[in-house]
Image (cartoon, rainbow, N blue to C red; front, top):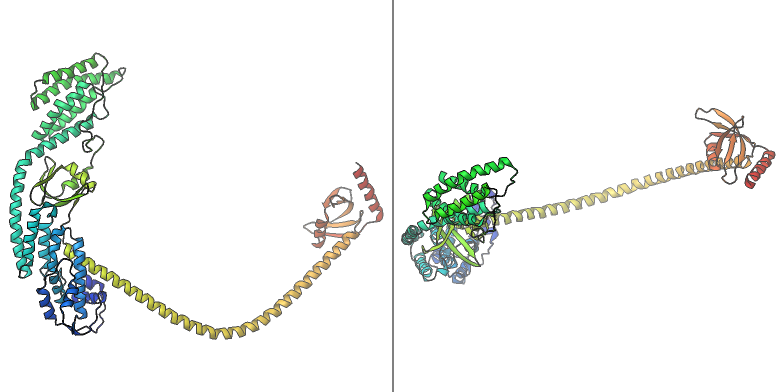
Length: 595
């Protein structure tokens, strides 16, 4: 029966897998209606236990089609089946199994639904589903339909075991026996491959390392033809044999590296006037021949060895005699291979991370749009070589540590994570449902807050209306008071303006009466007055020229400036002057004009 009690979903309890909380989350995420008589829980479990589904069938649709007309699923049952369909669909999308295998797992969907109906999360330890699916995932990860009949036969045998009657535990046991037989068969093939390829892997490593080392030393250098031919021929063979016999971590290998570098350095052009450097070259040449013979004779026996060493000595003799060396261009070894190029160097950290993978790790390799699954079967650290096989135990690829690191960094090869995709998918789905629940809660809380805010605003509006009437009355009284005050201020301003205008008019009247010869007292900052006489009024500029009693010019003010001083009591007219002075001014101005 559907529960009537609303359960508050707790985040931590859901993440911890508490069933009551998880079921509440499923009911909220996949709501169903009880439109009839709920089917008996045990009858539903029995129906699911006998059910065999095709890959594309929906569990919920099939179950509802099998119910009587008066029966229906309870909300809990509906949520469990709906979640099962959704969960298994996501699981298959996230599962890195080839469709030839993943499609066989559809028959396990009813078991997932049964665990939910029995109030258990499918990925919990009690259900037995996780060990079964993880066993299949671990042992079938490399199977591909492109492997042909062998893959098809494996898929059919796997399907027959999964579909057989019995408990999940019994199916897990049967699968374990089946996979152990397959593993034993593949192990035999891989052991034979290891025995056959071991020498080849060491030889390939020695060939690659000797070529790369020489490329690094010779790149950008000038060498005579006989020297470059020697280095890339007999000397490379000496290096290759040294790697095979002693390894590239030995003291002998370090010795041959130093000797190679010194030999190439001895042939580089130098300034003959540098006596000290020339002497150093001469001393090195004396030691090189003996060291070359010692290393070369100890590693390989060539009928032309004496001839080759003689050619080197002949070139060195030219240097000792001060003769000109003939340099000729040369090609680096296999320079089209990026891993042998002197310009390419894989970082040690990248190589270490590539070498850290253990035998048995599966990878997906993509080449020209073709995808294949390969397993690291043999790792030889000394030779720095990796051997890969396919699902059938047949050799699929062979790479050095550097080649493999290059392919990893270029995303040409990616490792297949062999964790627990079933549990990871389930927990990710629950987390997604939980996040949606939290978002809905936040939205509901937001809507409730909005509604509360609307009510509050309405109450505020009503209170504001009440306050408005009181404020309007008070405002009317205040407005009248303000109007009266404003009128009073305007009247005062008008009277002030009128007084100011009257004063200005009075000053203008005084100025109009002021004639040449008039007396004006000018006051300084200390209110000390000085009597000055208006000596002249310049008509062109309007300036009034004032002189003191000694006849010395004291002030030259235009009419606005003089008006300003009179208004501010900085000047005072005490005598307006006579017409005689005005006539004299006219005469003076006339004389200035004629000049």
